[in-house]
Image (tube, rainbow, N blue to C red):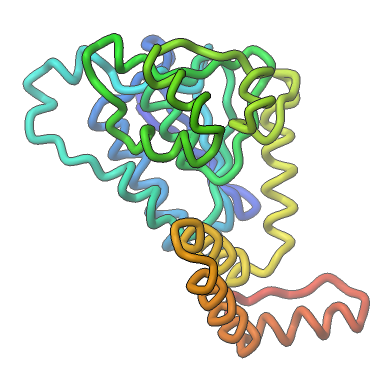
Length: 251
């Protein structure tokens, strides 16, 4: 059985974690297969947006603890989480059921998070004597208020979708039967935008978060000047004037 299912259509790559018997806990092969899918998203110009989801009753409960304690894990090199730091195209996390540990870290590595009403979230590593190792300690406090992030990290407790929405951890909370349709609708709206502009937007926003405002503003100015010289910039203005949909070429 494939541990990760990858399907491509209409500019979207669906990446589905497929270990439902263990609630999509990820071993090394699974992490690497997801990283490969994000490599493909970045390198294939026909792909514009990724949607990450889980098969069965869960999004992902995190790292497979049995695998961590096995000889197979010795010398494992984590490719997935560093890859999420450099991914140039948007990813949407479609979350249902369990979203814990490394699953929550993958969701935090996405640009947009949509959850069904039955979803719940948490970092349980502290109760195993660990801390999150996939950037969770750094990403969570950048998304929700510091005190709330620290409480989740210190206690290992979980929150439901309604609380996650209140804190801003997720963008949307929807009925389970509308989860994928909502994600695909958002992806479709992104695909209407100029591809190079979307990539520059992601880069400028994320890089600017950790810079002083004057440096961040310079990043924005440089990206703006670069984009204004592209073919797509001219096409966007022309399409607007002619009242038609633009024909983006990513040039």
